[in-house]
Length: 75
Image (tube, rainbow, N blue to C red; front, side, top):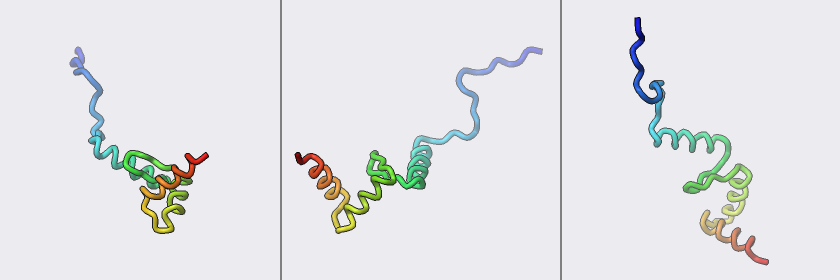
């Protein structure tokens, strides 16, 4: 008896996810590890804590990042 010829490509596993599902899972995984997502930027837990300290005075995230980067750029 001859086995039927298999089609091209990987065989289905039944566990495929859409790109939206994969990205959501990635974001949830990173957040559970203490990281913060800013658009497509991922902050480490230490950087996220520093950002929290910078915004504690009422500054927005944009303002805090701009001020921090400006301060770092000063000679």
